[in-house]
Length: 289
Image (cartoon, rainbow, N blue to C red; front, side):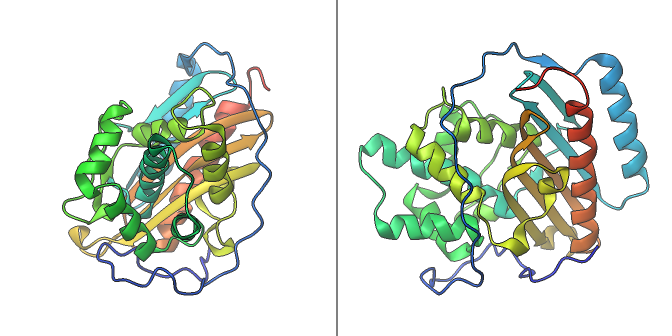
Protein backbone atom coordinates (compact mmCIF):
# COMPACT_ATOMS: atom_id res chain seq x y z
CA UNK A 1 0.00 0.00 0.00
CA UNK A 2 1.25 3.43 -0.84
CA UNK A 3 0.00 6.55 0.90
CA UNK A 4 0.35 9.54 -1.35
CA UNK A 5 0.22 13.26 -1.01
CA UNK A 6 0.25 13.42 2.80
CA UNK A 7 2.44 15.90 4.61
CA UNK A 8 4.74 13.75 6.75
CA UNK A 9 4.41 15.60 10.03
CA UNK A 10 1.48 16.36 12.31
CA UNK A 11 3.46 19.02 14.14
CA UNK A 12 3.34 19.56 17.86
CA UNK A 13 4.93 23.02 17.56
CA UNK A 14 3.01 25.47 15.44
CA UNK A 15 3.52 28.86 13.87
CA UNK A 16 0.99 31.45 12.72
CA UNK A 17 -0.42 31.13 9.22
CA UNK A 18 -3.79 29.40 9.39
CA UNK A 19 -5.31 31.68 6.76
CA UNK A 20 -2.97 30.30 4.08
CA UNK A 21 -4.66 28.81 1.00
CA UNK A 22 -5.79 25.20 1.20
CA UNK A 23 -3.36 22.51 0.04
CA UNK A 24 -6.22 20.46 -1.37
CA UNK A 25 -9.80 20.83 -2.47
CA UNK A 26 -12.21 19.27 0.01
CA UNK A 27 -14.92 17.03 -1.34
CA UNK A 28 -18.45 18.29 -0.93
CA UNK A 29 -19.79 17.39 2.48
CA UNK A 30 -22.15 14.45 2.57
CA UNK A 31 -25.70 15.31 3.51
CA UNK A 32 -26.32 14.94 7.22
CA UNK A 33 -29.72 13.41 7.96
CA UNK A 34 -31.79 14.65 10.89
CA UNK A 35 -32.07 11.72 13.24
CA UNK A 36 -33.43 10.67 16.55
CA UNK A 37 -31.30 8.80 19.06
CA UNK A 38 -31.74 5.04 18.58
CA UNK A 39 -33.44 3.31 21.48
CA UNK A 40 -31.11 0.40 22.23
CA UNK A 41 -29.88 -1.55 25.23
CA UNK A 42 -26.10 -1.45 25.37
CA UNK A 43 -24.28 -4.77 25.61
CA UNK A 44 -20.91 -6.37 25.07
CA UNK A 45 -20.15 -8.47 22.02
CA UNK A 46 -21.28 -12.06 22.82
CA UNK A 47 -18.44 -13.98 24.47
CA UNK A 48 -17.91 -16.50 21.67
CA UNK A 49 -17.78 -13.80 19.02
CA UNK A 50 -15.56 -11.65 21.24
CA UNK A 51 -13.05 -14.45 21.74
CA UNK A 52 -12.97 -15.17 18.01
CA UNK A 53 -12.35 -11.51 17.19
CA UNK A 54 -9.74 -11.19 19.93
CA UNK A 55 -7.88 -14.20 18.51
CA UNK A 56 -8.05 -12.87 14.96
CA UNK A 57 -6.61 -9.50 15.97
CA UNK A 58 -3.94 -11.11 18.16
CA UNK A 59 -2.83 -13.34 15.28
CA UNK A 60 -2.62 -10.42 12.90
CA UNK A 61 -0.71 -8.15 15.27
CA UNK A 62 1.74 -10.90 16.25
CA UNK A 63 3.42 -10.40 12.87
CA UNK A 64 3.14 -6.61 12.79
CA UNK A 65 5.61 -4.08 14.21
CA UNK A 66 4.48 -1.72 16.94
CA UNK A 67 1.21 -2.01 18.80
CA UNK A 68 -2.42 -1.10 18.17
CA UNK A 69 -5.81 -1.00 19.88
CA UNK A 70 -9.41 -0.55 18.77
CA UNK A 71 -12.75 0.34 20.30
CA UNK A 72 -16.12 0.45 18.58
CA UNK A 73 -19.71 1.19 19.52
CA UNK A 74 -22.53 0.00 17.28
CA UNK A 75 -25.25 2.58 17.85
CA UNK A 76 -27.72 0.40 15.96
CA UNK A 77 -27.43 -2.71 18.13
CA UNK A 78 -25.96 -1.20 21.30
CA UNK A 79 -22.96 -3.55 21.13
CA UNK A 80 -19.57 -2.34 22.33
CA UNK A 81 -16.22 -3.98 21.70
CA UNK A 82 -12.70 -3.01 22.75
CA UNK A 83 -9.34 -4.66 22.11
CA UNK A 84 -6.30 -3.76 24.21
CA UNK A 85 -8.23 -0.66 25.11
CA UNK A 86 -6.38 0.13 28.34
CA UNK A 87 -3.28 1.11 26.37
CA UNK A 88 -2.79 4.91 26.12
CA UNK A 89 -1.60 6.42 22.84
CA UNK A 90 -0.49 9.81 21.64
CA UNK A 91 -3.37 11.20 19.57
CA UNK A 92 -1.46 13.44 17.13
CA UNK A 93 -4.06 15.10 14.88
CA UNK A 94 -6.95 12.99 16.19
CA UNK A 95 -6.83 15.45 19.11
CA UNK A 96 -8.40 17.95 16.72
CA UNK A 97 -11.73 16.15 17.17
CA UNK A 98 -11.48 16.71 20.92
CA UNK A 99 -10.64 20.37 20.29
CA UNK A 100 -13.62 20.69 17.93
CA UNK A 101 -15.97 19.25 20.54
CA UNK A 102 -14.72 21.67 23.21
CA UNK A 103 -14.84 24.62 20.82
CA UNK A 104 -18.40 24.00 19.62
CA UNK A 105 -19.60 23.39 23.15
CA UNK A 106 -18.02 26.68 24.23
CA UNK A 107 -19.72 28.66 21.44
CA UNK A 108 -23.02 26.99 22.27
CA UNK A 109 -22.74 27.97 25.92
CA UNK A 110 -21.96 31.54 24.91
CA UNK A 111 -25.19 31.52 22.92
CA UNK A 112 -23.69 32.82 19.70
CA UNK A 113 -23.03 31.62 16.16
CA UNK A 114 -19.56 30.90 14.85
CA UNK A 115 -18.03 33.81 12.96
CA UNK A 116 -16.80 33.35 9.41
CA UNK A 117 -13.23 33.36 10.71
CA UNK A 118 -13.99 30.72 13.35
CA UNK A 119 -15.61 28.54 10.70
CA UNK A 120 -12.52 28.90 8.54
CA UNK A 121 -10.36 27.78 11.46
CA UNK A 122 -12.54 24.74 12.20
CA UNK A 123 -12.93 23.84 8.52
CA UNK A 124 -9.20 23.82 7.86
CA UNK A 125 -8.37 22.10 11.15
CA UNK A 126 -10.57 19.11 10.29
CA UNK A 127 -10.72 18.99 6.49
CA UNK A 128 -7.06 19.82 5.86
CA UNK A 129 -5.63 18.82 9.26
CA UNK A 130 -4.16 22.32 9.50
CA UNK A 131 -1.98 22.54 12.61
CA UNK A 132 -1.90 26.33 12.76
CA UNK A 133 -5.70 26.46 12.89
CA UNK A 134 -5.74 23.77 15.57
CA UNK A 135 -3.23 25.78 17.58
CA UNK A 136 -5.43 28.88 17.45
CA UNK A 137 -8.58 26.99 18.43
CA UNK A 138 -6.70 25.22 21.22
CA UNK A 139 -5.77 28.59 22.66
CA UNK A 140 -9.37 29.74 22.24
CA UNK A 141 -10.69 26.89 24.43
CA UNK A 142 -8.07 27.53 27.11
CA UNK A 143 -5.32 25.16 26.02
CA UNK A 144 -4.46 22.15 28.16
CA UNK A 145 -6.57 23.21 31.14
CA UNK A 146 -9.55 24.18 29.01
CA UNK A 147 -9.64 20.90 27.11
CA UNK A 148 -9.10 18.89 30.29
CA UNK A 149 -12.02 20.68 31.93
CA UNK A 150 -14.42 19.95 29.06
CA UNK A 151 -13.40 16.30 28.84
CA UNK A 152 -13.86 15.92 32.58
CA UNK A 153 -17.33 17.47 32.34
CA UNK A 154 -18.18 15.01 29.57
CA UNK A 155 -17.12 12.04 31.70
CA UNK A 156 -14.15 11.24 29.45
CA UNK A 157 -11.74 9.99 32.08
CA UNK A 158 -8.57 8.65 30.48
CA UNK A 159 -7.55 11.44 28.09
CA UNK A 160 -4.71 13.74 29.12
CA UNK A 161 -4.21 16.90 27.03
CA UNK A 162 -0.59 17.56 26.15
CA UNK A 163 1.50 19.92 28.27
CA UNK A 164 1.53 23.60 27.41
CA UNK A 165 0.22 24.07 23.89
CA UNK A 166 1.32 20.67 22.56
CA UNK A 167 -2.17 19.41 21.79
CA UNK A 168 -0.78 16.69 19.50
CA UNK A 169 0.86 14.93 22.44
CA UNK A 170 -2.52 14.43 24.12
CA UNK A 171 -2.71 10.81 25.32
CA UNK A 172 -5.89 8.77 25.25
CA UNK A 173 -7.46 5.34 24.92
CA UNK A 174 -9.58 4.19 21.97
CA UNK A 175 -12.67 3.90 24.18
CA UNK A 176 -12.28 7.52 25.24
CA UNK A 177 -12.16 8.65 21.63
CA UNK A 178 -15.32 6.67 20.90
CA UNK A 179 -16.90 8.60 23.77
CA UNK A 180 -15.74 11.87 22.20
CA UNK A 181 -17.46 10.80 18.98
CA UNK A 182 -20.61 9.99 20.96
CA UNK A 183 -20.69 13.46 22.51
CA UNK A 184 -20.11 14.96 19.07
CA UNK A 185 -22.84 13.01 17.25
CA UNK A 186 -25.48 11.80 19.73
CA UNK A 187 -28.89 13.49 19.26
CA UNK A 188 -29.29 13.26 23.04
CA UNK A 189 -25.77 14.58 23.65
CA UNK A 190 -24.55 18.04 24.68
CA UNK A 191 -24.33 19.60 21.21
CA UNK A 192 -27.24 21.17 19.36
CA UNK A 193 -28.39 19.66 16.07
CA UNK A 194 -26.74 22.42 13.96
CA UNK A 195 -23.40 21.89 15.72
CA UNK A 196 -23.62 18.10 15.33
CA UNK A 197 -24.41 18.48 11.65
CA UNK A 198 -21.58 20.95 11.21
CA UNK A 199 -19.04 18.64 12.87
CA UNK A 200 -20.14 15.63 10.84
CA UNK A 201 -20.08 17.72 7.68
CA UNK A 202 -16.45 18.61 8.29
CA UNK A 203 -15.44 15.02 9.04
CA UNK A 204 -17.35 13.82 5.96
CA UNK A 205 -15.39 16.11 3.65
CA UNK A 206 -11.71 15.83 4.52
CA UNK A 207 -9.34 16.28 1.60
CA UNK A 208 -9.15 13.10 -0.53
CA UNK A 209 -5.52 12.30 0.33
CA UNK A 210 -6.52 11.98 3.99
CA UNK A 211 -9.36 9.51 3.41
CA UNK A 212 -7.71 6.39 4.81
CA UNK A 213 -7.87 4.51 8.10
CA UNK A 214 -11.34 3.55 9.33
CA UNK A 215 -12.75 4.33 5.88
CA UNK A 216 -11.24 1.00 4.77
CA UNK A 217 -14.18 -0.73 6.50
CA UNK A 218 -16.45 0.65 3.78
CA UNK A 219 -19.74 2.47 3.80
CA UNK A 220 -20.40 6.15 4.43
CA UNK A 221 -17.67 7.67 6.58
CA UNK A 222 -16.99 10.79 8.63
CA UNK A 223 -13.44 10.61 9.97
CA UNK A 224 -10.31 12.28 11.28
CA UNK A 225 -6.84 10.79 11.14
CA UNK A 226 -3.59 11.50 12.93
CA UNK A 227 -0.04 10.66 11.86
CA UNK A 228 3.30 11.52 13.39
CA UNK A 229 6.90 10.23 13.47
CA UNK A 230 7.12 10.51 17.25
CA UNK A 231 10.40 11.68 18.73
CA UNK A 232 9.52 9.98 22.01
CA UNK A 233 9.58 6.67 20.10
CA UNK A 234 12.77 7.38 18.19
CA UNK A 235 10.97 8.57 15.07
CA UNK A 236 8.69 5.53 14.79
CA UNK A 237 5.23 6.36 13.55
CA UNK A 238 2.03 7.00 15.45
CA UNK A 239 -0.94 6.34 13.15
CA UNK A 240 -4.53 6.87 14.34
CA UNK A 241 -7.99 6.98 12.81
CA UNK A 242 -11.41 7.70 14.32
CA UNK A 243 -14.83 8.21 12.83
CA UNK A 244 -18.47 7.37 12.29
CA UNK A 245 -19.39 4.68 9.77
CA UNK A 246 -22.69 3.74 8.19
CA UNK A 247 -22.20 0.27 6.79
CA UNK A 248 -24.57 -2.63 6.07
CA UNK A 249 -27.39 -1.00 7.99
CA UNK A 250 -25.27 -0.28 11.06
CA UNK A 251 -24.08 3.05 12.45
CA UNK A 252 -20.76 2.62 14.22
CA UNK A 253 -18.38 4.88 16.11
CA UNK A 254 -14.84 3.55 15.92
CA UNK A 255 -11.34 4.50 17.07
CA UNK A 256 -8.16 2.70 16.04
CA UNK A 257 -4.95 3.94 17.66
CA UNK A 258 -1.42 2.67 16.98
CA UNK A 259 2.22 3.50 17.57
CA UNK A 260 5.80 2.44 16.81
CA UNK A 261 5.34 1.53 13.15
CA UNK A 262 8.56 1.78 11.11
CA UNK A 263 6.91 3.96 8.46
CA UNK A 264 3.57 5.56 7.72
CA UNK A 265 2.44 2.99 5.16
CA UNK A 266 2.93 0.12 7.61
CA UNK A 267 0.97 1.95 10.30
CA UNK A 268 -1.89 2.80 7.95
CA UNK A 269 -2.10 -0.84 6.82
CA UNK A 270 -2.30 -1.99 10.44
CA UNK A 271 -5.01 0.52 11.33
CA UNK A 272 -7.06 -0.32 8.24
CA UNK A 273 -6.88 -4.06 8.88
CA UNK A 274 -8.11 -3.63 12.46
CA UNK A 275 -10.95 -1.41 11.27
CA UNK A 276 -12.07 -3.89 8.59
CA UNK A 277 -11.79 -6.94 10.86
CA UNK A 278 -13.69 -5.32 13.72
CA UNK A 279 -16.44 -3.76 11.62
CA UNK A 280 -16.97 -7.00 9.70
CA UNK A 281 -17.37 -8.91 12.97
CA UNK A 282 -19.90 -6.46 14.39
CA UNK A 283 -21.99 -6.16 11.23
CA UNK A 284 -21.97 -9.81 10.23
CA UNK A 285 -24.98 -10.66 12.42
CA UNK A 286 -27.54 -8.91 14.57
CA UNK A 287 -30.28 -6.39 13.95
CA UNK A 288 -29.81 -3.48 11.61
CA UNK A 289 -31.28 -0.05 11.12
